[in-house]
Image (tube, rainbow, N blue to C red):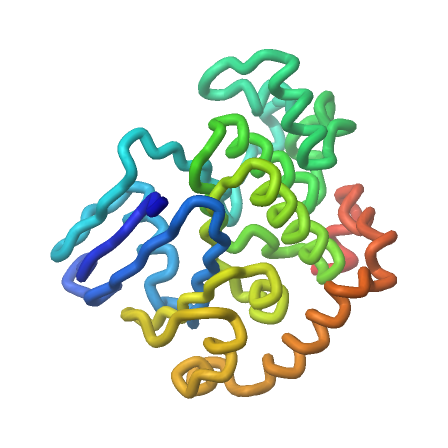
Length: 254
């Protein structure tokens, strides 16, 4: 079942064409990743799908009653504002304690509920944002660079969590990412964007496409094979996902 489809979508912003003639779709339960250099229109595509900006040409079809959960790349919380994770998850609509506890258990972060938001490490913060998105019971989960600032084991753990959630809830997942090797292994389909769709398809197909190589070089081929090997054999890093359990960890991996 198609959740969102764009047909010939062009988006112009301030006289600049951010996206041109983009045909895109995502179906229930699918993990689709958008890659592309900075300024290639990745965030514009996300914002158009969410409904925050309107296409200049073409159109977007969304399934009636489509529920979208959104995990932003970053969210600044003023350290002088005392707000616990539990309270944050009740904004803007109050949620029951049972709902909140269940979703935090689902994202493997139930021990954070009484912590202050500003004390969370990068990985803990992202899991909290993911929990908040999941509280909306989304048909489509949109993640914009969700692992910025996490180290590689932390990123891999986060993507595995996303895969598990997709399996369990049947939620479609649309991700923007720079971490090509991780993304390639986690995605059903990859879309390479550079103002328009350069190439799209299964990860292996995109990784070997000339358009992709022109943008990213061929070096990711090796990384892709390496990561797949790690992924299939549960690499020894797996027991060590506590990399981001304290704010001080941020400096180590920055």
